[in-house]
Structure formats: C-alpha cells, structure tokens
Image 1: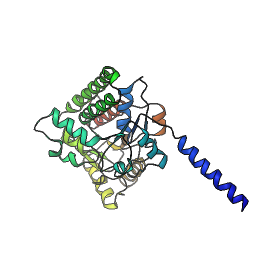
Image 2: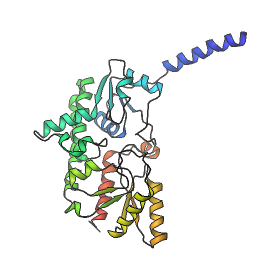
Image 3: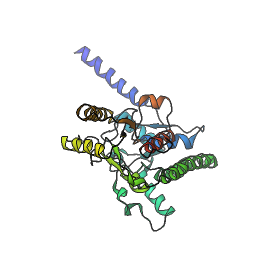
Image 4: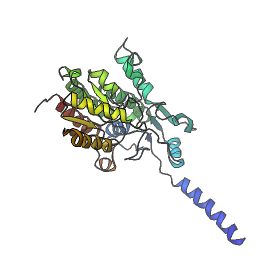
Length: 307
C-alpha cells in the first residue's frame, strides 16, 4: 500500500510538469502551405511559429495530441486550413487565441480582388484542396498577413514587404502556367487521389487522377487501375505523375504493369499536392516556391516544352 501511495503523487507531479513544459508559440498552423507562408512573412522577426502536422504525416486523418491542443490555446494566432479538412479545429479552442479559417478568409480575399466572381461559383470552391493553385495562394498570403500584423503591428512594413515578395513570385508562376498553350489538349495522368481540380479549372489543365475521391484513403479499384493503364497507352503518354508524399508505391506498380504486360515504358515524375512535406524536406527548409517550380517543370514535360 505504501508503494501505491508513493506512485500516485509521482505520477501527478509528472503530468503537471509535462503540461508546464509544453513549448508555446505565437502562431500555430495546421498544414504545410500556411506554415511556409508564415515562415516567409515573419522572416527574421521574433514571432515564433510551428506546424502541428508532423513532417511526413498524412494530413487528411490527422488529429492533434493533447499537448498540441495546449499549444493552440496558448498561441496568439491559430491558422487552420478548412473545417472540411480539419473538422476538429473549432472544437479544441477554449481560449482568446485568434482563430483563422483560412479557406473562408481566402475566399473573402478572392471576392474582394475579383468583384462579381465568387470562388464558390467555381467547382473548386467545393474542393478541400483549394490551396493547390498559385493564384489562390496569393490570396492566402494576404489573409495570413493581415493577422500577423494584427498580433505584431510594430513590424507591419517588414511583414508586408516579405508578403509582397512572395506574392510576386507566386504571380510569376501563375503567368507561367497560364502561358502553356492548349493546356487542356493533353491529359496529365496523375496516379493519386483528386487533388488538382482547382488547378485544372484555374489554368484549363487536364490532370486526370486515378481516383475521383478527395481522400487518399480511397484505394483505387482494379477497374480504375485498368482504365488508367488503358488511357496512358491510348494517349501514348511518356510521362506519368505521382505525389512523392503518398502515391509513389501505386505509381511504381502501374509502371511495372505497363512494362510487363504491354512492354510500354513510362517515366514517373513528381507532382506535389503540398499537403505536407517529408522529414528531409522539412530539415532542408523546402519552400512552396520550390515545389511549384518543380511542378511546373514537370508539367511542361507532357507538352514537350523546352525539350
């Protein structure tokens, strides 16, 4: 009995110390795109920030730990992607932290910049992957900038300059993608879930996904795989795309099936959906702009641009 009485106080002390030792941040974000935007805007100022989705972890089914919930509520600013993706986001907040529904605020920025053209008027307004567009990301940057200035108005000019530099780079990418002639004329075969509908509509691309589902948990059926293989052959595609974060395995299987069954060879190339990045990319501070540059270079392969 004496041992039990000793253990309980020790356990209680451990739990209290754990809660006290939870590292706090000024800004907590859920997903990689807004993490990189915050990192770029904050620059070398003293605001601290963190992404609660660990590098290398799939975004769709993620839920925060109790320690991360504490971090959210101890922050000045909490930025989440969408109530459709992070269904838990509003339920965990019980403090005065500024909460930013980035999808809603991005839509508001879009509507202000393009009067009479509402984001919801487009099919991609209902796409949980709304961030997969450099044009949309410009509006995301504006929304995030407003709230960073809200918590640190003293450095508003510095933050605005950093945001403008990022927006200019995204704007150049926007122009480059728009410069692809007859963009819808060639299908871009993507061996993953339906991530790129926003990009398709925005730039008249024809990215054909292996599955129509917005979730990567929807395993492709044998019929879907067979149809994709048939379409790749019919269109004589040289390049086939995959998300290196989540669909490389199925891509290699389809590549192998094409070779073994039909002696048809394709080259697999990455197409980033930007849900998250790998641990190695996180350590090397990989940026959104780097991912977009790689995407654009690889998309151009289908159109044999620059070959």
